[in-house]
Amino acid sequence: MQAPTHLKDLVLVGGGHTHVHVLKSFGLKPVPGVRLTLIGRDVETPYSGMIPGFVAGHYTFDECHIDLAWLCASNGARLIQDEAIGIDRASRQVLLKDGPAVSYDLLSIDVGSAPNLETIPGARQWATPVKPIAELGRHWMAFVERMRAWLGPLNVTVIGGGAGGVELALAIDHGLREAAKGAQVQVTLATKDEILAGQAAAAQRRMRAIFQRRGLRLLEKAATVRIERGAVQLESGQWLQADAVFVVTEASAAKWFATTGLPLDERGFLAVQDTLRSTGDERIFAVGDCATVLRHPRPKAGVFAVRQGPPLAENLRRVLLGEAPEPFVPQTRYLSIIGTGDGRAVATRGSWAIEGAWVWRWKDHVDRKWMRLYQRRV
Image (cartoon, rainbow, N blue to C red):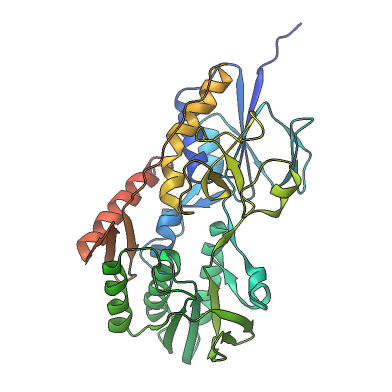
């Protein structure tokens, strides 16, 4: 009787920053008897740190996206292009939108997050959400093509004043001025708080000066209450003309998490231990924006997802070999580099902030170096 070709199924749901490292790690050092499967809705997964640079026109689509089909094939993993919609924990199966359920012995989830569009009436119909980040690249390319023939005033509103919203607004301003030559571009950033709330006061001051110097309109303490076709209404009652609206507000969790019976945090994200394992199921791990490490909560930022890659790969390997996973403590302070779209960037950590073209070159070098680990060399 022929022996089975594999004894255990390790299934990765989502092609996020953490999971691409797991694919590479298991390709370089496979675990005998383990079949690795990636379930992903998108075959091309973007690196979120480079998407604003793509919007600004500094990167091509291919330069800031990872080909998951190639990455899986070159590392001995099976790829299933489909969207997870649930988990049957009793039978240990991932439920898919279109295809048959996929069985697992060990499961890891890295599906990111999305803006909560339900909090702003009209957002789902008239605005472009920046997350899932995998969809933004194609949305932007289609938008730019339409704008190439635009004549006269072009008003774009970005809602959300965190680092993601600020970086996107500056990137849009630069990208549209290059692409839509016939348009008079006016980009507005509206945020319910101060710009870069929670960041250093020095970073806030620098960013306000950059907005003023570049001619972008900045509206702070200006919450959005409604979006209609061609217009955005603020809490003050003021209406903004908006030919396009991009939403970069607080992230929300996938709705299907609530059907799994797994423990969630107060915002609906998967609750995990400091080993990155679910607090309610020892066969399930979760990482990136879709998870909250209860003992070490951190912002939903790509820097944390990237750094969870090595500990997740090691802990999955340990569990598959019958060993206990080890705890991981993320850094409490981290360097934030915010591109300004024009070949410059602002770096901030703690109480300080610096700006310059060399900061962008540094960020560009770091981002390209990370991408080379997972891209096909041509």
